[in-house]
Length: 215
Image (cartoon, rainbow, N blue to C red; front, top):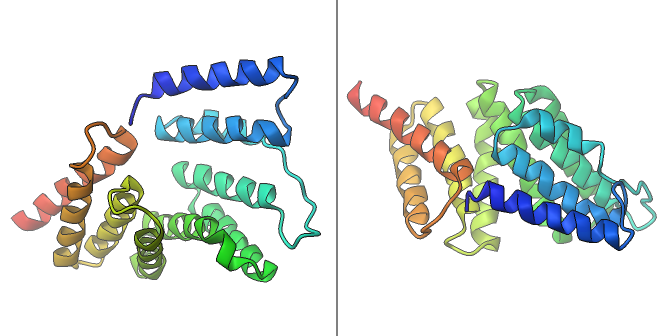
């Protein structure tokens, strides 16, 4: 919703309660707090803070059950920080590592949300690296899976639509880009409050589409 200060206050309160209950940082129960702080920092554009928080994550490397989800989460969050920091090659490598780990575990059906996070990161990084043709199938798959698994009004569907529209625009395919932008705007209109981390990319996309229409 974009209430970043309120989110931080609740995280501070939650951290104090955990510490009072002797749940300390760098432990599995504390990971929820750390993940939320990393995502908040990314939403606010504070990549340095997000980077520093990565070291606070607890990782259990035990893969006796086929996969370590704490390790996968660490890779994904690191990839998302790398993406936001412009480290596109590293972001893509980590995203591919996540997908490979999920596939080799034989548990892909159960970890679809991890897989589409990896697709989104890899697609967005390829797009930032001026390789829209490589980004296209990844972003198409991201949107298709999100539309299947999430509520129709989810801003995360709009997020994928915006990125895919940017990809089409980079390929000089203005009509599908405009259609996706309109679909994302319709989702945004359903929410009275929505954070800038969702609204800003749509504004930037609309600006590009306006310029494309004027050419």
